[in-house]
Image 1 (cartoon, rainbow, N blue to C red):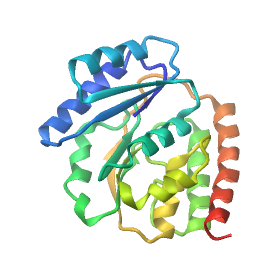
Image 2 (image 1 turned 135 degrees about the horizontal axis):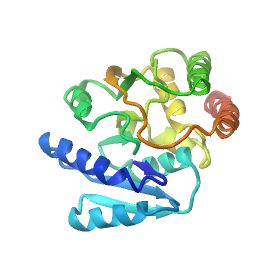
Image 3 (image 1 turned 135 degrees about the vertical axis):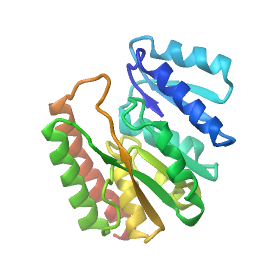
Image 4 (image 1 turned 90 degrees about the vertical axis):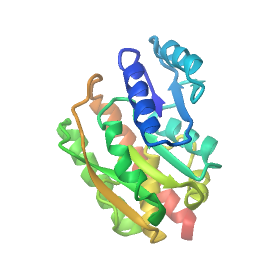
Length: 225
């Protein structure tokens, strides 16, 4: 879970995940990556990690959302199953069982977000990302950038290490790889609530998306030349 400046929210989000995973009887670790937050986020994570050793705090200099996600994947891909979610509480942990109970038949299971209420710019970028990924790698996943994904780690290790460290949207590339390799894919609709905090930095998102296009092209070329 990547986290940036979520001091007012992250405590409740983490407790919600602990309760949901406990209810399923899962042996797990919850790795929380504090991406250089400038508020009290780091303190909240540290306090919770001291009371529950399954919460593991990672503090790092700010490198961006995508790069932080990729670092989490690389750090933890020695596990059989790897799950990523965001820290904003958009998708409830109560949906996780839908993925977990069907995992054995698939290599990647994603929560396909329904009911999103986002800035029009994000919608355009989402559609463009889907079109680019399908054009370069083939179809198979609708919500290519879903931040709610359960992956069989061994199927994606090469992908994790084949992406640039500063990648803007690693999940798009991972989804595209799953389609290209014709892995076993399952998308399950999940309700998506409105963000509880944060604003849309339109210029930053557009610039990052342009960067993502070139990164995805270079990654595709690296696979087959």
